[in-house]
Image 1 (cartoon, one colour):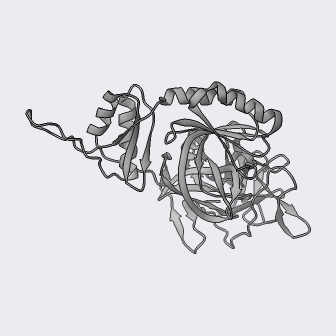
Image 2 (image 1 turned 180 degrees about the vertical axis):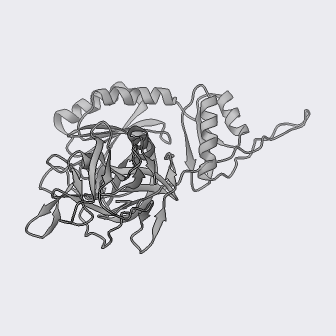
Image 3 (image 1 turned 135 degrees about the horizontal axis):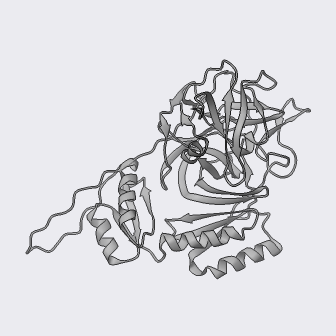
Length: 391
């Protein structure tokens, strides 16, 4: 289907702007839009957490010298155990082709390109899947496409498809579409083109609204800054555009923006200046919260939850890692791609699994009525860059 990626015009595409006629924040016309949502009447800032899982390797099948060896059984694993086993197996396989978690079957699936690797994977209790391309080949193709990227596109290695999936919005047409198709053709069978409805837009807070200078974003996770002060993470396109934050529209400042990066990455930090309650938890918008104990790395196939001030709480699945999205303002790399919906105003909000913080809402296409896809800045990378820690 034809689709479009869009951003809110102005210094920060995913920030919700005030609309004098309606007395509530509205996105500017044209370009990227931000989600709108009335502020939950709380003064505390909540955090969202994401759960990271690891799976334990199963036992090897032992056979007698004279008996024909039986095919090792595929182990039933938790997402956490599968993650640990995947790391071990892919590091041992020279022609690594990637791995993913089959949440329905509760099995680890490891892509292989030769029989020796297949036997090693099966012996460890995972499901081996023979594919054509190695992860190195696909990563190289993605890098080439990113170096001469087309605005309005996103690129990610899809380990299930064993291809680089390039998603283009409806703004990609005419000469730009012809250029893109030529680039994809040069990569042979390693790439696949998809279209998406709507425009890719940045989304503006664990899940609660934060206001500043006529705009609104969503708080991601409460943290301790590098100098030991309380603060919070949100999207970089929020902190690079807004310097002071309040927990209500037109309210007194409670935090000041600090370091942030956008484009390239999409993370930012703010330090609390007022006496504001800042528990390490995420707002679930049903009167309850999810405690966040730390950060985790997202895994392909993992079930995740997003909380944001416009569309509140929605669930979905991680589709790809290290995705690159080319917004009009520039390209953002290293993103988590999901099928979780989001809308303008959700920018900076929390992506989590259980009690682990996974990501900060960056942007995406579609909405929570028709569906869509959303990209997230990984939290571990943001914490490392900023010298901060959860809580």
